[in-house]
Amino acid sequence: DIQMTQSPASLSASLEEIVTITCKASQGIDDYLSWYQQKPGKSPQLLIYDATSLADGVPSRFSGSRSGTQYSLKISRPQVDDSGIYYCLQSYSTPYTFGAGTKLELK
Amino acid sequence: EVQLQQSGAELVKPGASVKLSCKTSGYTFSNYYMSWLKQMPGQNIEWIGNIYGGNGGTGYNQKFKGKATLTVDKSSSTAYMDLSSLTSEDSAVYFCARGALNYGSYVMDAWGQGASVTVSS
Image 1 (spheres, rainbow over the protein chains, first blue to last red):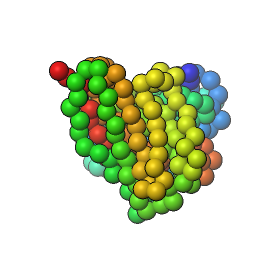
Image 2: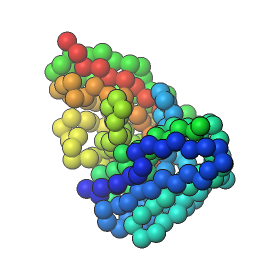
Image 3: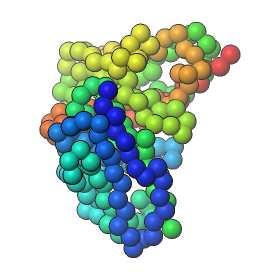
Image 4: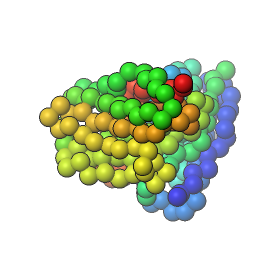
């Protein structure tokens, strides 16, 4: 199984910062990587697919990138509503696997 | 509007089985996959498997083979997941999520609201 190592586990950020969350794949996944946001008691929602493409209706302050086997989600000037848990998902091979999640708190 | 409506919370006894449903609307059911996922309280999300709405073809996470059985009813655009021989380790929230290949990679672009399963005597 492909392991997705996500970091940090949690972070607190101000509204003026740039937030970066990373996922490192245990092997190459050919950009078969998506990012999801989950709020308490809710289902995950798609933010980014194919590593860098923004899903419909997602604000442009969210962006995705790749460097080698490390993938990053960046939130520029986050809003209070961006609080939640963020997960990466690899769909290069089954079983599809998620990162452990990053809990983002905005202060 | 794409919608996935899951069945309600279940309280079941150890050793029993439960069948969860995911009724869809707003898209052509047979053109997409449906994934099922497990999330235990405060923990990571696990992919259980998926099923293609067109022909019922399935793919499972080896970890859940023998535990979960996925089926579809095309006539009602509904996906189902049977969970058998339940133990406390099966207590979790289960999500259905539409799986699409038209993005390039496999993407879960719409999710149900989740169904809580509690296994307790």
